[in-house]
Length: 302
Length: 333
Image 1 (cartoon, rainbow over the protein chains, first blue to last red):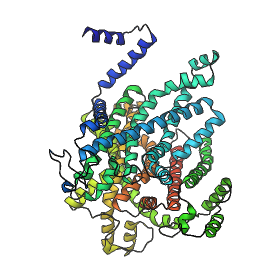
Image 2: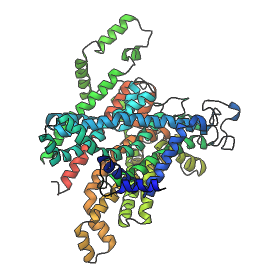
Image 3: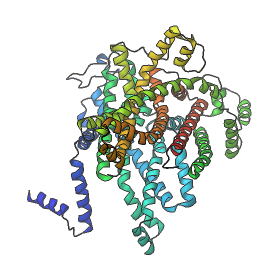
Image 4: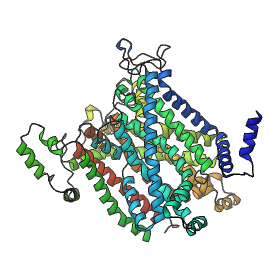
């Protein structure tokens, strides 16, 4: 117990004795602020739940997600099948758990592709200014000029429907807002005294952007990414629903709804349950993102 | 004013970019346009000749210029499915989308703005939290799930709404097309039954489509109102003893209306995107359904044509929003 107390004291001290202590102290304070927001914490726990469910799907799921049982199709939720079965008698709860892997995997893949790209484009454009800025921002504007889903659809159609193409298509349409954001942040950082001082010590532009500008853009980028993850979930599910994302028999949630939509009038739970899953995960990202914004970026939220 | 001119100059560049993007998508696709037209049984020499006729043997930059020339002449190629020119198809399907999006917009404004103002006026109260949760819910629910649930509840269970489609079979092709907006056309024709039918079919998809925008509009209204309510002129108005309603609407709201208008224009552009999925679920014969149907049949001319047109409208609305802001708000003039 005293260990915990002393760690807490070490984190919250007003006089940190090392750079590491100061950094971790700051993180701990942010965490305390976040913890005081009920809605954000609800979102966080919901997400943790979905991540655990997806990660341990092989151990949690009571059935093989692809195993068909045509004698027991479109069953209502019961103790045998917690959430019922679909049109081929496959267990919906098991498919939902495995489907979480597809959805979360797509979200992570898009973010890993997009966030560094947007950050790089925005920081370089903002820091360099002049021609480079104008060209990069014009390219950004072109991609912003299409509605996201429409452009993603056209991209997937040109490639081949599937998870990989869907991820690439969403990534191609998702980076411009990050670039805009990073550029705006960079413009305010560029003219500060500490950047001028760093430049006087002989730091290269590359070093200044990488070590001084980019880290300062991170907090607003994290907020934006978290809020955006809900949009990514919805776009991925929308592509799946339109038959352009994950393909059946993959238990991707959007594709599950698409193949079960004709049962909406009678066995309504079959398409509704994956829909509820999409809604919950998207809501979780929104709640968490909203809370993070209040903590990390108070000037944005009101 | 200089910024405005600057913006106008940048529009052609953006449009050129749009054309580049659709051209590149059209070129990277694995579908061979020659095979798509002739089928795979055509003799070698016919394939070779068609390839030359389509200009596919020329260098890519030349092909792009050719493509650009076609776009400028309003020629987006021929749709493989409908065998009409894509431009004609789009002109045929677009009014249905405009009708859907416009009614959705009206609903969203009528609900979203009062909600936002209410939340701002009672900041920190239960009402405020309720609006916040409602907005987050609205932004988190997938349009197609909402559409399916609405069909289940309002069509199947309650029987309040007619099914999918734009009009009942009985009223199909009864009303002469003037504007392409079925509700307006039936009014112009004086056909009240057709008007009722069209409106009934419109209500459900428009309500579903509006949902997402209600959340966004309410959120923005709340943020703008809070900003306005912290102004000193509000303190003055309170000191004068004006009623709270008058302060809210005549003083604070009047001040944010221009900023809000620009948001609304952008929301309208966003509705076009939601329309793609809504139309698919409700079998609404608009540009969104045209796009998805062409997608599933690998009809690339139609897909790229529709994408380009939607992009054009998007850019146009963005420009309108920017121009309105600069013309109407004296602070940025």
